[in-house]
Image 1 (cartoon, rainbow, N blue to C red):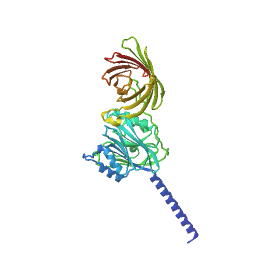
Image 2: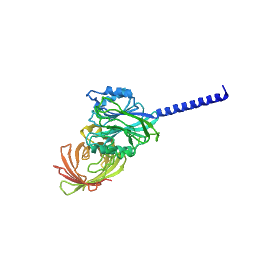
Image 3: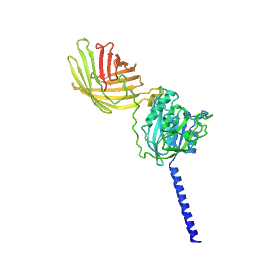
Image 4: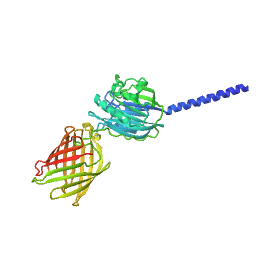
Length: 453
């Protein structure tokens, strides 16, 4: 063999080796950066023939082996089966009545960084969205799963809230779910500025109804860091929806150290006649009432001294012609809870709070109080107060009703069966003037002014 031929063969071998290694390197890189996602509505846990579909679902997942599965219309008893199959299960139960729960779920076998649940504004059936940050073979991103409502107004409010939440999140982001409208709907007009839907890049068949698909309500939206490389709607009779599956390639990783972003609650206009649930505080207030003979006035002044996220300190003084007493109270808010976790099926959307207070007055008497406040909706709330105002245990329940933005009323009953009726007026949602009437009492009415700041 000549020297020239030997050199040529060595060059060919080296070039082939370089190409082979380069090809393997690219293939490995592509495989590492690929992500497979499935979204599926489970039809309340029943197939098209009304039979439980959990076994069909598990067979489907074993066959497709997605990295992440987003599910809607999930019964809680299915979560145990998914967990037994080796999945991390992140559930967001939206339609709740004590032990009864119904909602969405996300399944994955990969590393979870964090997860949380968001309720979406709902006047009809309560809806929500699950959020996870997940690490799939080094791909770190946020995935969201939702199921929008049936009415146009409901969907618009819910999707506006989803967009508000996304504005606070790190990217890359993928949003999956059953949106109850096709991709062409005007609901998504603004969203398309920063996100694309799977079907705009790759043709994807319709998914609903499963027996004769006419629309694709089941969608996967993604931020610009992703590139879809494969997608399909899978023929299946395990639900009234067909599963939609997609493979993505991550083009760029913008954030590698994910932390849970702080997302403030949607702004709401607080009305002191029916206050929002908030850290404990005492407004500046003055109340006065005539004594039984009408000769003197019993006047009380309440003054806030300190306000912190869960603690406040207030000072109050009571004055009449014969007595002056001051009381200092420490107020602690140990619990705020969302009543949608327990009562959303009854369309109760509010929150509740408990506040405990302890104090001492200038007569060296210990004062205790436990206040429960349940804000059932934008129009009604209930207060329950238990304490020892006259050095003996007493309780009072009061129903508050917001009649308009400037006018409210209340109806109450104490532990002795004595009623009280109140009317409140606020011209600017800062100043409040109240008149309370106590039928049957010798001191049977009271005027109260307060200022919220």
